[in-house]
Length: 365
Image 1 (cartoon, rainbow, N blue to C red):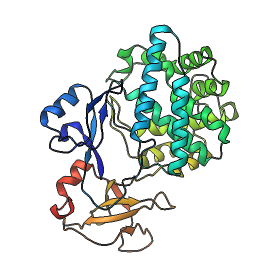
Image 2 (cartoon, rainbow, N blue to C red):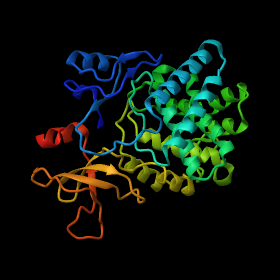
Image 3 (spheres, rainbow, N blue to C red):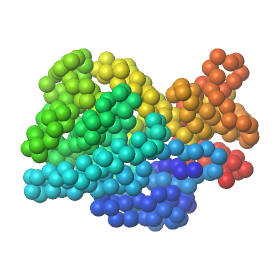
Image 4 (cartoon, helix red, strand yellow):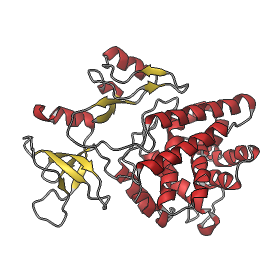
């Protein structure tokens, strides 16, 4: 089982996946025992969290939006494209189109539901990981929403480049830990317009340009940069907007920790600015409780999510401990909200490092 823990809690565990820098070079290889020195070094390089080998509880940990190699290729291609634009004012999109084709092929091959995002990143490359996630989620939601196959490369490329306008922002502003001032927020919001200009200069499909310009517009007119509403916002831009909001909330940032997929979806659902049909497609596309996630259910029992069901709110679980911490070895169970006495509600998520501390020794694998 692959688990993700904060880097400061990683010492003593086995690394489950290669860690690479933005240039694609391996910093630390999978299978290595993480020493305190390694953990300190990763922290100094800005890493927020690392994947470790967790206990074997019999579940399929599920797949990411895109798997490690594809995500690394996307991050590397974005890094090169952004660097070429900074140095030469030229956006090389050939490698990006190739990455988008690979993402689409992988999503078609892997099935309709993603279980977690590729959220492992450092401060230096979190923008690239975010854009990769938005591209994958936009594409998957587009598939679920019935977007024509010929339009998927447009949607994937728009997701990959939706934040390209941030190239024109000062790095100090992008990396600021404190809340932005009104003047700084106004400057930050210009990235949509700048991104559309960059895409226009690169002679990209006008629908890609429109998505970049409109991905922060909202159906109720509350968005930016133009305050568009309703049908003034293109259908592909609505999809990228939902994917961007979801991925932004479900991954760590300099200024805040991520929330669970369920919390991210609930936040989007209560906002009147997002397309409801796209939201329904998102619910068909993401696991609200990803496989391998530790949860606390009614009765204060620790459980792990085994697999998804047709109802995204009712996954299959394996109960691990009862309210007193006694190990349970029962068969997998499904949440049964209408059955008294059953595990009928997920109360909250349990961080992996906390779950490992309370997990009985016989269940640690």
